[in-house]
Amino acid sequence: MRNALILFCLTVPLAGCEAIMFGNLIVSCAIRPEPVLLPDNLPAATVGVPYNVRLEVINTSTPVRGIYVSDTYALPEGLWVEQQDHDVQGRITGTPLKAGTYEVRVSAGTYGTQCAGLRASRVYRLKVTE
Image (tube, rainbow, N blue to C red):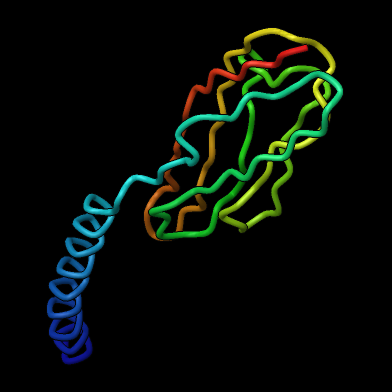
């Protein structure tokens, strides 16, 4: 009986403390800023000329998991994204092979810790001239 009483007396105050900590976690997850993918626009490219544009993810509370390009709205042939895991910066690099105007969807995700990771996405219009 004595052990049960001691266990009860220790558990109840700890449960209250955990509830407060959990509440703080929920609030802190809810008020995190959304990450933003920069730049706002991509500069024009020229067929056969090397292209190199910096991408950056700002407002991140955790490291960046990756910067990706959609298969549906892909970069023109000859261009790709380079980015190191955990780095807030990446690059669109390469040499475009074909002229045209392309809609390109670039997304970036952050790692989660106590909160789920967040995502930033932007659709760019990339013009490649002859």
